[in-house]
Length: 408
Ligand SMILES: [Zn+2]
Image 1 (cartoon, rainbow, N blue to C red):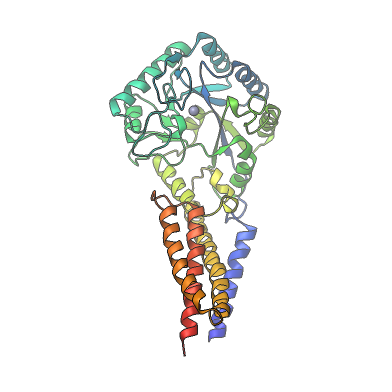
Image 2 (cartoon, rainbow, N blue to C red):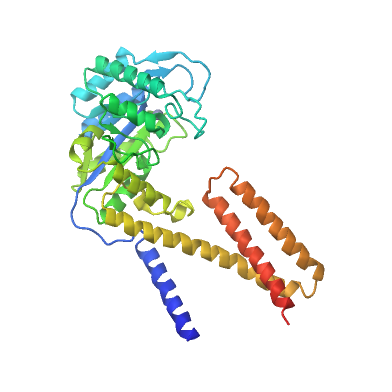
């Protein structure tokens, strides 16, 4: 009986790891479909580099690929992260002219990217934000003033909003709906009211991750995968040594996107018109999926995280699969820390009685202290979770060895 159970357990573990190794996205290849790719370039303002932006628009035109520019209407004069009083620089006529050329050539559309992009203190969430944490009236005024400036200078309708640092709150959504915006493009973790009339088009990856995202979108059995790759003018190594890619690599990406028959590159405004479902419900599913593996180290995370897919069945199966992987991962850590501690205890304690108490009580004390340190801000990350699990396994091993030795 026991032998049958062991065999069943071994078969189950083997099947699970086979699935893990052969299909981390947990699905078979799907038939021909259109993968929607949206390119989003943030932080265009009076302070951003006109040289690289002009090159950018030229390249978009040459490869006939559209892009959405997130434009800051009244950029703060010094530093985004400096919370002290700063002057604001309205979008200059030169920079508006560059945008107008791109709009006329049909390669870019414009989204409102905050007001000044200056950090305000968000006492509730902490971290950088221009909008979340601010009063509704303040947010409404900033968004209205920014929209008015862009619309009057560019002679277009601006109805897509990109919050700086991808952060916003429920009052931001309320203000956007009141001002006639159609879509918000932030990250995956913002507020999303099911009843909201806004469309949600979250950024899913960076430019260097784009090829991996497209590969994963091809494997997911989903009729409407969307990838939003975001970047900034200073993402290029040509002007910033901390950038993510060279401009020539970006041109290579544009060429590759244009050559793929299964990829449809759209601007954000085109995606809002053409993608059937960009509802809050889709964002909520995407967020649940991302949360299903957030306790895994980054090298174990699936490439499907870079794709905003649509099918609720696909989300369901991915969530179950990745919760299972997470469970196995932590069970493995528990076992790997339990076994050496247990056997070391069996070996050492009979020979060195004083070591038993030291290991038992010091180990428990270290576990408690580390747990307080790891979870003090009530945010669990994978490094803290791995440390606590390993210490817990070690403590259980030591205490079990001690109990086993006392057993007559
Ligand atoms: Zn920004």
